[in-house]
Length: 244
Ligand SMILES: Nc1ncnc2c1ncn2[C@@H]1O[C@H](COP(=O)(O)OP(=O)(O)OP(=O)(O)O)[C@@H](O)[C@H]1O
Image (cartoon, rainbow, N blue to C red; front, side, top):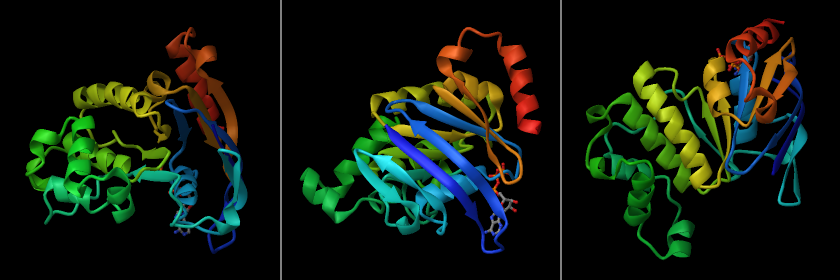
């Protein structure tokens, strides 16, 4: 389990954006965060990535207690799959992945960076496209490459920031199902930020609703509580909490 405790975080203007965030992540499962635009979901992910510093709180993993005041971009517990995949257009798909592989990983696994990258592309079913360039693949395929890149970083947890937001409904449906299986198969922990209540209900083990100013967790839904509920009335209830 990864225990996340963010007491608060403010940008330099000192106005707190988030407070009292307690989240427990479970191996192989997806935990979703839902909230209004601007409530601080991406900020929360950026704090976990060590991209924003100065948060108060701690992260506990494998009996290690990491204080957030020492947390920075060198952390290797989390990696992120952004909403828009950031692939280098001048590198082919294979080299977009090899770039993310450290020399330590190569030595540890006794494999070339190319072999490690091809294996990650295989997990996301993109190995046959390895020679293509980012402008020769679809957005859904680019999202899978972005996930492969997160996988080679060897982080325990993957932070997914609205990964399906710009993808058409049919591809999204396919990728959602596929993603949940990959998280389980690779034993990763995952946080999914989404605006889509149905997506959260479909994929998550646990859903946290963020609202207020500063935002905090207003309501938590556990899978064993929501899996047998009527999805339409549950969706209505959640939307009310999102707006509160
Ligand atoms: N670098 C920054 N400096 C100061 N304030 C910021 C910065 N980045 C974001 N904010 C503010 O922090 C708040 C939360 O922004 P954030 O992007 O985390 O929201 P969000 O919930 O992810 O929104 P969305 O759903 O639209 O992506 C907003 O009020 C935003 O204006």
